[in-house]
Structure formats: structure tokens, C-alpha cells
Image (cartoon, rainbow, N blue to C red; front, top):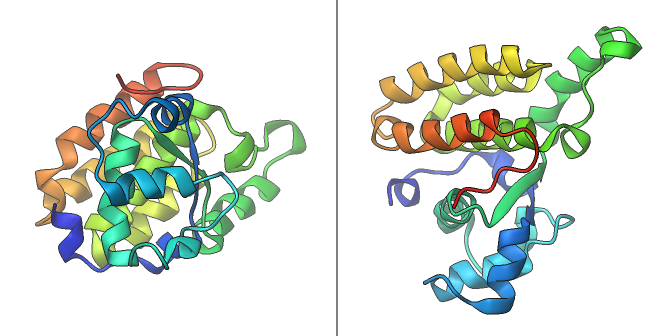
Length: 188
């Protein structure tokens, strides 16, 4: 996969993933054709460990495409953003009146959190230096309407990227399905 040839953003080491219900079922039943590394990473993701804790199992460069596949299959979901990516969201939240503040990523509506996490992860993986602006827009989005605007920016950047254009459509479909479904969205 292309992500193996790209240097992952430093944010990846600080990201936290958890298994979805489908991911927990996969660990128990072993129904999908996952590779040994993919299955090991899936088992180790517990919603508390940072990706850096997986360093003994797999390098950060090899981890990005594994996380990409597990998330695309609906087996995992990002539940914690790195400090650098979360800071703009926290600042925007504190500037808003208390009644309209966005909840942190862990407590946000699951469908918005999943869409946001996918947009950030793919931007960091495929956009290089252009990722910072996209991540800033995505994390600053305080509601679904603003996230849809950020999605437009994300899509244009992915289409303009040499490596991103090859996977943009697949991820766009996943993000759109996440936004359409209120509540946990797990692709089939």
C-alpha cells in the first residue's frame, strides 16, 4: 500500500485507537483474513495505549497502513487525538459559550468522531506538509455542517496529492457514510 512508502506524521505515535464492537467480535471469532501483524495490532489496541506502545511489534512506518486497513474494515476507531491536533479544537471550544461547546473527541457523537479521525489520519498519511491546514480545519469544526465544509477542503487536498488521489474516493465514501449515520458507524 502507498502509506508504507510515506513517512507517517509524528502525530501517529500519540494517537489512541479502540476496537469497535465488530473489532472485538473479530478478535473472538477470527473471521476476516487478517495478517499476523494486523491481528496483533488489533488485539493490542485497547482505547488507552498510544500507538507508540506498539513500537516493539511494528515500526511507525508499517503501522500507518495497518491502522488504515483496520479502520476501513470498521474494526477500530480513533478515540484520542495527539496534543498538537487536539489543541486547536480545545481552543475553539473554550472560546465558545458553555452551552455550545463541542465535547472532546472521546465524548463527541461517535459518527462525527469517526469521520474526524479518518480525515485527520488520512491527511497526515497522504498530504505531507499540507496536512497541517486540513487537520486544523477538521479539529476546529464544531458541528456536522462545519465538518462537511472541512470535508470539502480535505477532498480537494487529497485529489491534489500525488498519493492521496489514489485512495481519496474510498475514504470519502467511508467518511460520508459515517456522517450519514447518527450513532456508531461500522462499515459492513
